[in-house]
Length: 438
Image 1 (cartoon, rainbow, N blue to C red):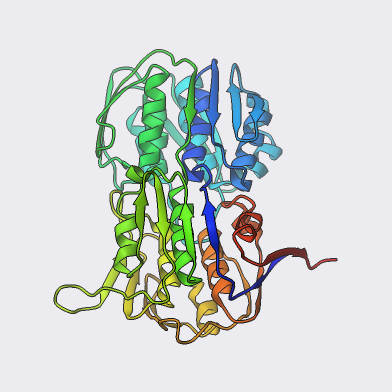
Image 2: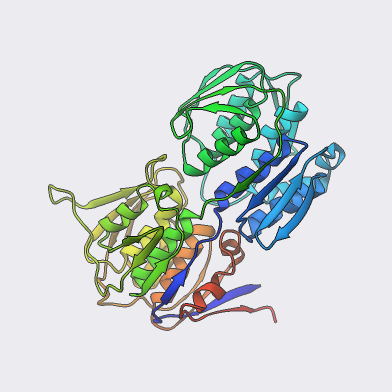
């Protein structure tokens, strides 16, 4: 079992570029099933979740050609429905939360789709109702085999309709959009998610011949077309990595430049870090974080404690709340972190408390952090990564702590971050990957 040994207290210096966006990659790669023509995708991150999805597509019958380290070509002339009913498909798809987005493209092009109940992070209940209610609105029939935990959706012909989504689910919106692009007539989706990665998907589909309007809003209109063609697409940089590096620089009191961040697609993220007192400079499309020995959390105008909460775009992405929480442990002042969407995502704070952080876990959704202002360093400890984002938050804590920490279950971190130890060690970190089983 691989673990990280992290020697804390080393400052970082230099420049680092974020990888391609994981959450966009999962949508875009599923969309290649919509056409028999060649689709080329650039800036694909070499991370576990994405590589597993590419291998799953290959086993489904998609021709996959690796053009360079981060560029691939996909040609889905046909897919193997015998394989899709196999145990191997079931096992591979179950490992990936993003595998649920295979259904929309299969339904649109082939009239049927199959997927097991998907896996992913253990961060609380993540319901799929939005996806399947949307498919049913388009005229599909839905069946769930509870014993086998297997979803089946089918329709002879999808028909456009009006729908008001029960929640602005990103993956739900993406799945419904991919199903609707070849439906008969016009589909209107209200309360649609509008994250930059969903915008990227819609623009790519339009280049393939789809007719989607309202992109970047929560009201999408899709005029169905008979078929889609090939295209070429480049993924945005990963905003979660950008935020992780900002928090890391503040916690380790480092001077760092994050390169090529696609600043216009970061939304509220830089402003939220500024509310923690972290100084940032936009330099072209880079973010420069100067060394800060202290950063002070703002209060609201009436003097009450600052609250940082997640919200649908253009609000703050929930994937960064773990980073804000750990960064606040060494700020001056206090902040309430409110994780609204997932009820288990804050439980990792127990390990931070063990390290000496001053955190009150109010309930499964809220935690109050009282920062040390770097007067007291966190203590090294042994801990386990529960999910991708909490894993990186614990890594940041270990990098700032006194002594050598051990982080177990780092496969969770590998799911979302490419060669994280190598990239950070190049900046001055001291992180070693070892196999404790040897």
